[in-house]
Image (cartoon, rainbow, N blue to C red; front, top):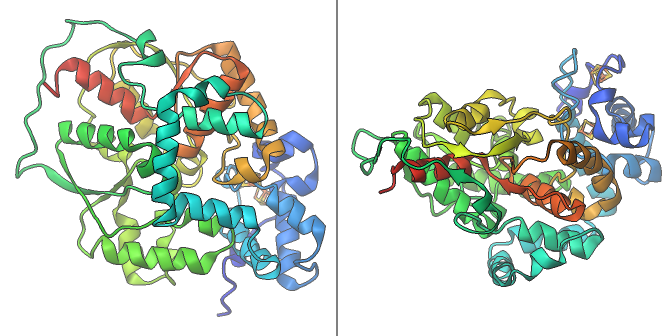
Length: 422
Ligand code: SF4
Ligand code: SF4
């Protein structure tokens, strides 16, 4: 069998067009070449050599793809669009190299030593509160809004608008983990560890309340998602092998609270040459919402708050996880989840896309902000760092007074109010 490196997943496309209305870039431009069907034709032509990697049209339309995979669940033929896109981007990268901005962003966000400094500086700047004041439209101001959106809010800022109805729950103090708690290993990631360590803390606490004992894996590295999306498959493969080795070969579940990282970790079987080690690793990867939903999760104290849940594409489309986050929010009495018509559409974050393709990114974000402006929730909940930053920056720029939270933060706050952490 000829190994076609991911392009074979595109062969089942029958050009029906069912995917067009699920594609945010097609909805933004109306151009067939910005649709999944059009891009599949471009990718096939790239594979066969009918179109060259140097063809500017190919690069333009493939660069403008979010990689959100919103086209996959609606496809009746089961086209593996995401794998085809990564194969095509690897060919483009072979031809044109890695753009300096991409290389710089990868180094800053995922480089072992550089990123430590970058995140430390970012946290210092964030602590001044200045980014929140500068948030707005335009590249710099949007970036400031993204940084401001990473700030822990428990006990401060907009979080005060969430009223806990005291005294309505018994004290459900949870004893520390025991030998009967189920062990799980935490995947920490890069952006999550650098800017969202408070979400890791909430993950550990809420899992503990539900009978899990979280263990650390010090030798883990970046999941490689940003590298794979940039066409750097060899670098992604190297990182995948390091993670497979770091997490060992037993059956302990690996818990992830970043949808983008989780989707990438679940690709390791394919990325690490379909090896048994890679496949076994994939079988252990669980989103935090899946683990919590398996245990109920245990109910917390009421939070009087209106929430829009915005599912990350890499949770809903790539991992097909829809119900578990809603069950997490359902464990919080009084909390109201309000739906918006375009919740399943991408927010335009898409890894580095928001930095590299700002015009398309904002065009994709615009209808979602319009829906949120109508609903006016107090909180927009989503389980991915890029989405939290993109939505937070967009809400601030549009003047919509809603906070962004990871769903596990809301459950954590509810558990805190219930006395689980007393
Ligand atoms: S990708 Fe799927 S839904 Fe889209 S045109 Fe091809 S077969 Fe139809
Ligand atoms: S991955 Fe997203 S942006 Fe790209 S073609 Fe599919 S639906 Fe459209």
